[in-house]
Image (cartoon, rainbow over all chains, first blue to last red):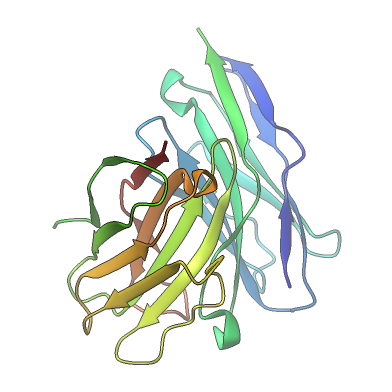
Length: 118
Length: 115
């Protein structure tokens, strides 16, 4: 079974600064997807960024980028030019590539609460 | 278009009562997932539906939990004889399919409080 670990329960950053959230995972599969989701107090889960394991290039979405280290099984999220609206709980998640018996279910880490100071 | 909707938004129930939670997926999405999120925790997979195939119930924590889905439409999650440890947010997600790059779109969740 796959596991996802987020070792930072809480992080804080000053507005306009850069912050990196850490995530490690464990799997015996070679093909999979990794995700970062944002959950504001409204509870709505919002997809921030996705990485396919077979792609060597790190994914980027505007101010959000990842550092994907497949051999180390590490998947960190970097938020540049932090904004007050970035404050939320962030979850790292894993999904098998081919479906199989996992049927596309997501396996989540415990989350990191990000606080942004003005 | 409309996203995933869930009802009720909040539910308070007494220990021992049964509750039913509803999820309306995005139209055309064949895959539907239920997850549970305990306070301050990550999401735990509960059950998965794909079209008319048999559901994957491997995440259901006990036989007090059950779920149904009619075709590719509404799903209901039922918890019988609720216990205090059932208090959590129950999130539903739907996607175009279980494989490939399909994104799971989440509803706003139902916060269940068992007193």
